[in-house]
Image 1 (cartoon, one colour):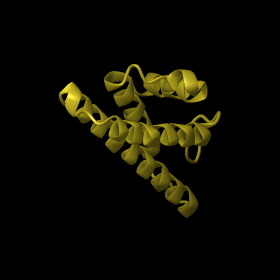
Image 2: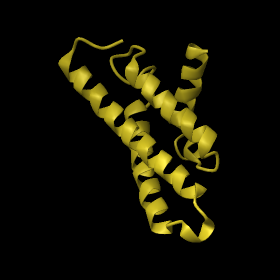
Image 3: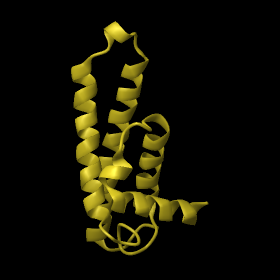
Image 4: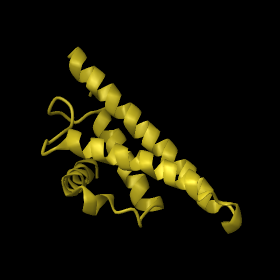
Length: 116
């Protein structure tokens, strides 16, 4: 669902952009891990994970204790956030976002129940 309220639409777009950038950083980190051990750049991986850290912190703040992130209704932002967290769970299971942001983890678990 896309809100008709312009402020909600702009907020949703902001969240979608952050989620997209986080996905880009995660994919780049994943690809870097596929390179030979000696060819990997620790600095590059660190930079990408810093982007992911910042994004998760912002996402957890936006979620707070809400039922849904924007407008109190399930929408595209919720799908983007769920996709991002699901990808992180699959490809970066050692990344502890669920422990660091328990409210976000609970939110994602609720979304999983809705979508499945």
